[in-house]
Length: 366
Image 1 (tube, rainbow, N blue to C red):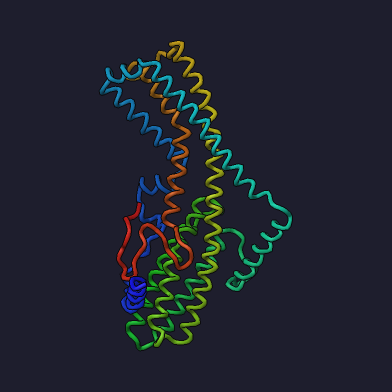
Image 2 (image 1 turned 120 degrees about the vertical axis):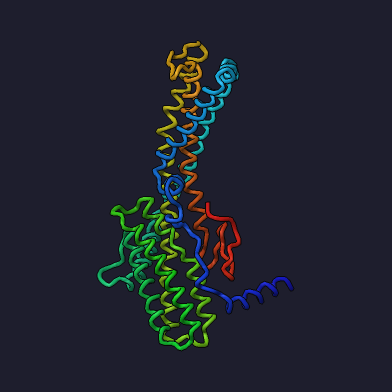
C-alpha cells in the first residue's frame, strides 16, 4: 500500500511539472519511416513485399551455391534428406491453408447473426451517426471513413484553435505557453493525417491506417492534465471548449476503434484469399518436384554454369516457401499496426509509452 501511495503522490506532483513542449507522441506516423523501411513495414503491397523476400531467399541460396559449389552439391545428392525436407514443407503448406481456412470460417460465422442482432447493429450505427451530425455543417453524418475522419479532425482543429484564442487573453504566461505548445502538437498531427487522407479511394488499407495514426490517447491525457494543472486560472469558456474537445475525441476514438476492426477484417480477408491462390500452385509444383526427384528427371537448365540440380532444388525450395512468405508479409504490417496503436481511451499500453515527465520508457520505434 505504501508503494502505491508513493506512486500516486509522484503522479500528482508531476502534474505541475508537465512540459507539453517536450513531449513528442509516439504513434503510427508513416513519415517517421522513410524509403524502403516504410514501404516494407506499412505502405507496400503485401504481394510485392512477399516477392522481394522470395527474391532475397533465392539470391542468397544461389550465391551460396556459387561460392560453395562442392558443399552444396554434397547436400543435394543426399536425395533422401531432400525428399524428407520437401515432404515436410508440402505437409506444412496444407496445414497452414487448413488453419487459415478454419480461422476464416470462424470470422465469417460472426457475420451470420439473427435478425434482432442485425437490427441492433444498424440501430447502434444510426445512433452513432446522429451523434456526429452536430459537428456537420450541412446534411447528415458522412458514411465513408475518410469523410468521417475529416469531419472530426476539422472539429478538433477548430476547438483547439478556439482554446488558444481564449487563453491568449489570460495574463498567466505558463498557461499560454502550455496551450500554445499543445495546440501546435495537435494541429501538426491533424495536418499529417489530413495529408494521408488526400487519396481518392475509401476503405483501403491506406485510408484505415490514416485513422489509426492519430494519437488520440495522448491528447486525451494531455488536455485533461492541462485543465488540472491550470484549473485555478483557466477561463470558464476555455473549460467548455476543453469539454467539447474531449467529446469530439471520444467520438473519434470510437470510430477509430471500429476502423481498426475494419482494417483487420480486410487484411485477414486479403491474406486468406492470397494464400489460397498461392498455396495451390505450390502444392502442385512440390508434388511434381518430388516425383521428378525420385525418378531423377531433373530439367537440364543451367545459369552461369551452375549445376542444374542445384538450380532446380533452389527454385523449388523458394517456391515452397511462397505461402509462408506471403503469410509473413501480411503479419509484418499487422503486428506493426498492433504495436503502435495499443491504447484504450486515456490508457496507453504501447511499447514506447511516454512517461509523465516526457521521458521515453520503452524501446525505440520498429
